[in-house]
Length: 82
Image (cartoon, rainbow, N blue to C red; front, top):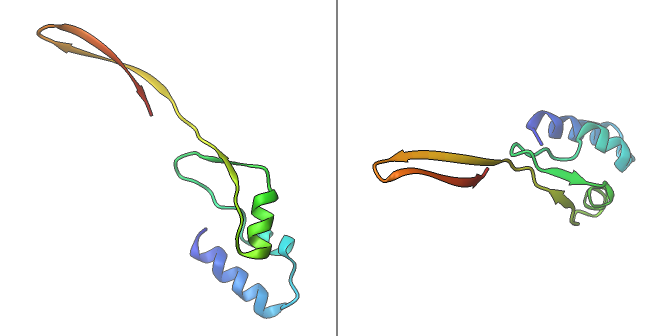
């Protein structure tokens, strides 16, 4: 989350102490992951927004590259998972 989203959520709670979790989720959406991970489903998100604890299932994103290097003994290839 970013600070702007959190400040907006605090203001919304001050303005409306009876705000619902679904209204807060619109202000502070689920976290994003800069490495490209994806959250699978919303049940875990709803649980930790409403109870303060919970878990979520994530799917990783990766790429497989074949790298060729030249050396005196010849060309070598290797596989890199990025």
